[in-house]
Length: 102
Image 1 (cartoon, rainbow, N blue to C red):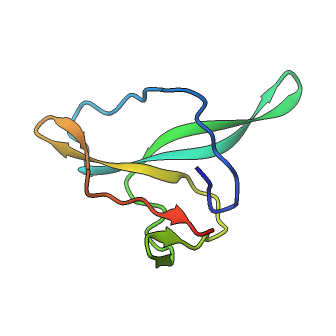
Image 2 (cartoon, rainbow, N blue to C red):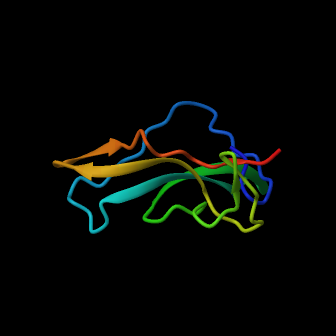
């Protein structure tokens, strides 16, 4: 993924993420991946982080033919939208994430 600050965020392998098991206050959650930096052996190493958010951080982006103009602010890149239905989470197949303009 490419975030709005131009950082390339690479997920090197398949991973899992624990999801809340009780009905949440907000029935829609967005799965985000974000660039991060960690200190390892006295040096800074690029890393990634998966999180859940109640709002789509790309919601206010200018769109043109499914592509987005980067906003320049630091926020995670939405990978998908989850909906709470009948005691479990479902991936929303109608969600179209914004792709950064070339």
